[in-house]
Image (cartoon, rainbow, N blue to C red; front, side):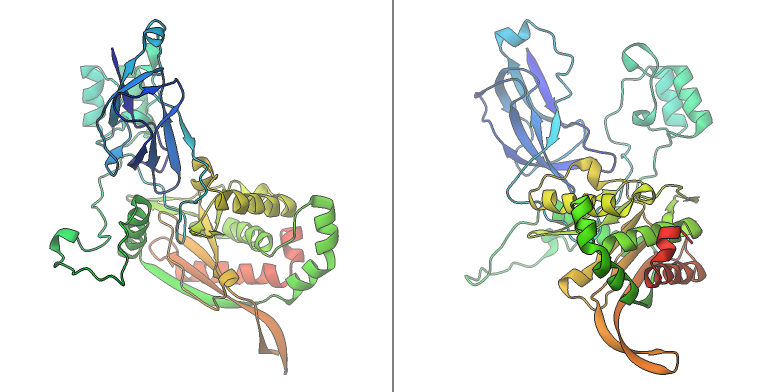
Length: 422
């Protein structure tokens, strides 16, 4: 009896993967829970394990194939021992993050959440329920079934229609990521060049960066902040802070806390556009860019407004260590509502960050540089940093964007505001 090996659920914002590597060839035996195939997504690399002991009968999706959630990867022949024991998980192989010496690169903001497409496999539905789902543009994957074995009943579908919580997202046109290789003229080989096939990760990142430019009315506003007070505070307490909490006191925690204060005052900056609706989020999940030798990843500080400085610094430090080892989980890379990108750690003096769609704004930090500035009637040298806020003008007005950035400036230049939330 053959068992299908299918693509498991990959995460709330991931609906497609690329088959990166098969660990077994057809005919080879495999133990239950042993890694069978490796999938690469735009966020992490995962392994699909064998649900039972047996042998790989055939490979349906060879390496390099793009596959959606629920797609059949291959067929597994049960061994006599496993066939005797029923397994309800035969079509739900476990997925877990892969620990790799080479972390998967990601440039700029973390990839934005995308809706599950209508073509994704759905739960088994009765004809009556199927008609309700189709006629009302519902996504069956988003409906909680109360029937036997989790089946969706007619009552479940009617409740979803009334609540409006399981709407199927309208299909979007595929973003123009690059010129199709089919239309390119032949390119002669040159021994001085190296050709590397673009990974699934890089293709999706390219598409989403282009999507941000194509779909959002993106503008950027700049300001500058005097880092003197924050630097003095850090210099005064960094040793005692590290001794007590076991983590170093950096500047990112100042900006995360300042961003949460400003987001509460200007909620559009923490929102998104969903079809013809504006979604305002009363939670504050801050994505923070973390550098690795292979590129940038953007894990998310969940409920950052409830985190204190030691927790923020400790979490960011942990993200950095595990990002370099490729050990960040899918859940840590999704769900952001606002992003902070610190190009200053690489020496950038100023830049215009690209939106992390569907988020409505992104804050860019830059290098601290001493410059002459006017303080009252005097010209003095101060440690200054340029700040850039890129925002979607469809949901954020110029007044809101400028006021948000001014609020960030006020909090950083007077860190007591952060402590007192004023």
